[in-house]
Length: 97
Image (cartoon, rainbow, N blue to C red; front, side, top):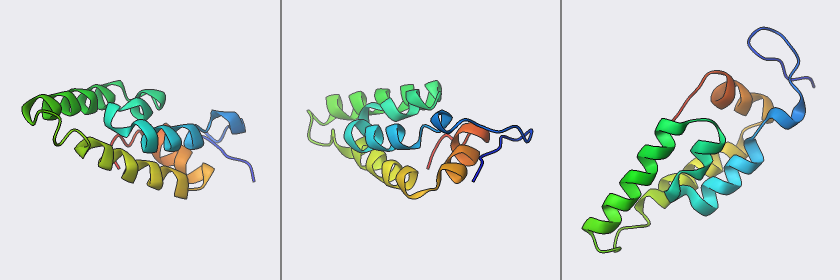
């Protein structure tokens, strides 16, 4: 099955960043690395800043809070098909969940 972009042009398979973004979201979700991989610089920076602020305020007690969001996003990324992932996160720019 061939994946097409919004203009109907074929997309090379390696352009889908689903696997790498999903794994990074699960492992490093609290740091927003998966957002940077997808090109969502603003969302990645927000995730990173919130993680550090929560860690400082709670003395590290709630530092894993943003990691839970990353875990959820990673599972969502990995359960989508390549085509659906590309359309949702790389073509249509859906920054959160």
